[in-house]
Length: 430
Image (cartoon, rainbow, N blue to C red; front, side):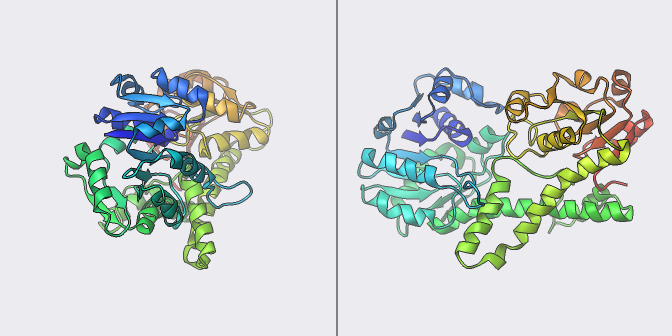
């Protein structure tokens, strides 16, 4: 099939590359000339495992352009632009979605299908549908469920696909079935519903996961006050099939460009609908999450006292492993807070040093753990990269005189670090 992808940021670039790999002819459209040059040269503008290989293959089926008129060659058009928080507020800014539709309308042909993948407030599709239908095209809402670091596999083999279609629009269902034929042949569940339900699926999923993470972090606060161990607690309740163990890892909380802004935008939309009380709990979810960052800083201060003239090594800058994304990153914020308290902070990350330096030039950066911990008084593990989880405590002890380690992700073997002479502190761990 001939496909256009409007917006080649994180979601769009991955989607375009995966659609081409599935055998479709794809043109990616973006106004950022430098981004288009990089993608056209087969280079990813951000770190995502597996994406560079897809951009380099297959030649001839994937191209990128800054001219939205090039979308006229396609019959299926994916809208994959961002929906950040509005300036000075918490609602989602859908201006990029509106601009994409405005730009696309003159180039639509009768029978085309426009597929929204951006995360938008419920009701957006209903507002856009009439405009798209006036051009003889049809609108489907097809939410994305990508996890940074696993975006390629999540696109190729998602755990479900959701189509939000107008009542009786079997034609669009057939078109998307053809687009996702390779995935559907694997038996992946397909859910066909209305526009509003499809819009809610992504935002509801993120809100549920955020709530689960903040719940266990609230339990970590209780555990610290009572001498309990939150990791053992999570193991115990996780055996209940109604609860499950996944996303019950206490630590410094979630971040990134999606989940924090999505739960805030969901609350804002509920307020617009006169239902603010229905999602009031999400405000506490957000506050619990933000408190964990300060708790990690407090643990450093409990161990070292005043931080002036102290050196702190921070291992991790990205908000999660296998990513260079530092948007709303707990790791980077902790490093900045420690620096603001007078400490000299040296941070390292396998992929996110460049992106972090643009956001926080006041931090010192080092390539590799050994350089980062040299001369440190304390070490903070802030992103659970495999390289950090696999550190050998006795070896680290030879690199630095520091004997305090703050495990912000509860990802280390506490007893092994204590045996090597470190004072180990985890969040919510006895």
